[in-house]
Amino acid sequence: MSAQNEASPSQRDDTVIIVPSLPTEASPGHAELWKEMLVHAEAIRDLKSRWNTIASIFRLPDEVLAGVFHILSFLYYNDQLEWRFVHRYRWISVCQVCSHWRIVALGCPRLWSDITVTRSMNWMRELLARSQEVPLRVQIAMTSMVDGMDKPARLVLGELSRTEELVVGISPDAFSILNALDVPTPLLRRLTVEVMCHRTTSLPGTRIPLLQVLTRPATDQLERLHLLNCPFPWNTPVPFTSLSHLKIIGSNADRPSLTRVIATLDRLRLLESLDLEGILPALPQDVTRIPTTPTAVNLTRLKMFRLVGEPIDCADLLGRLSFPRSIHLILECTSGRGTADLVACIRSRTSLVEHPRTLVLGEDFAASTFRLRISMDEGPIRDDTRFPLIVTFKSNSSLAVSRPPSSSAIEFCLHLTLANVRTMHIVGIIPPSYDEDRMKEYLDLFSGVSNITVVSVSGLAAARLPNMLVARTWDGSDRICLTTLHRVEIEEVMFGVAETFLLKKPGQFTEQLAQSLEARSQELPRLETLVIRRSKYVDLPDIRMLEGVVKSVIWDGIVDANPGEEDYDLNYY
Image (cartoon, rainbow, N blue to C red; front, top):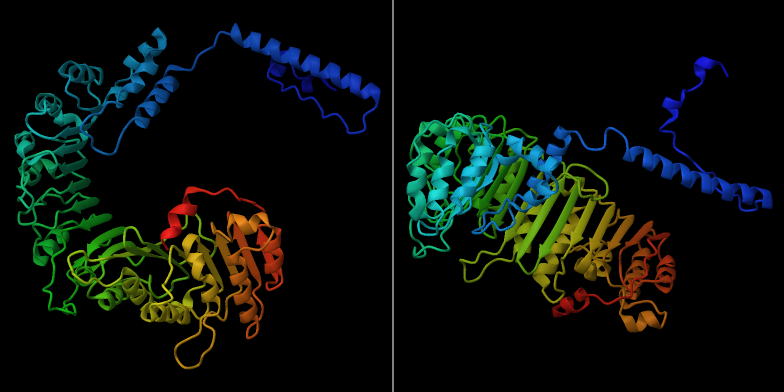
């Protein structure tokens, strides 16, 4: 080898020592050499460790160490406003491990610029001093004027001119602290105000006054505004023209007129995210169809829109807006009027109901909600699957007799172009077999997805899978609904009980599923694939029984016979 290709000793200092594996049928000579190589490799590792100990560089660069401290501080940040922030500053103890770490921490103003206000005036002064002149992120929770937070809050808010983000939880009797702020805020970009009434003497239904600071020109450069139970100044011309994110969660007490809402949105042409809950203007109860009105506002930059209210009220607002067809739409509706109008509005403004490829149905019995998720893509459901349209229906607690959320949800589904759906995932749904009307709703849904190829079920939803596979239409033809189905996926299902499992017998669910698949195969080709994942009380006897009625069974091989809490919690069905 030429000299120019030979590495110098300095270039070989970081060479990794690799010891080859001992062959299975190694000779005694190879075995002895292999043992010597292990000894030398261990010696080299020890020498390299001693080398690093006396090296001139034995610590992280200051900027890297400061970055680690900043990440650690962020881990202790709590997005939820609390009365006491007992854990917020515990990360500081790490900075006191040695004098060098403390010097690095004190020399990083950005590390001290994320301030959660406490009752300690001295600590607040120290934080403001350490942060020097860098922009601040401030979080304050003031439950009343007598909780000892007013003076520290005033001290920190005195630096509002260099605050870029302000999160305030405040009671109405402490509004005076914020209303007294009349200073320029050139850096303020994000403002969150949550009105906290749980520790005040206000009676239920008491009207919350308008926060005057929201009507001042100091807020004209805001980019993100979140108001929770805090009135929005709908009736006042507001300079929020730079807003890109607006979130308003009202208390349902003071609802603005639709005219005011439209007039305000017309000025917010830079909006990318809009979230409205508890503030939608409500149509009279005797109105069953939305009035026909021309589009009033064109929100060309809107990417995410969340609405909470009765379907007819959501449809009334959507009918007056236009936005990009690629929008991400989230609707949370009470079971009530206007489901058909709501679908019609979505259809006229997006392609979300015209070309659905994946439909996810989920029912939460405890919360009395039914959620639909619709995707334009095919394939298995993953954590990163994008659902441009999410609609949740919940029971209307204000009515003595409320329509079941599942009925409203299935009515919504029946207005979709179900023939385009290829994959359907069902979780938590058990239509009662004794309720003929509800069973017919599900049969109408199964009849609509005429080209579906994949059905996956998980949890309680699997209880009705055997009936679903042989469900027949109600149109008089008496044909099986899911004729194009060729793949079924089952996840987190109990196939039997401990007694039958220990006897090496197929579980009850296995027997029911096999009977349905056998009956289905009398009229249709056998199911191509059955996939079983993360399920209980399933073993080879179950798999062998299912292989007799399905072309291919894919099982993850997990044998789980340990009873868990859910085995007992689900008995109420």
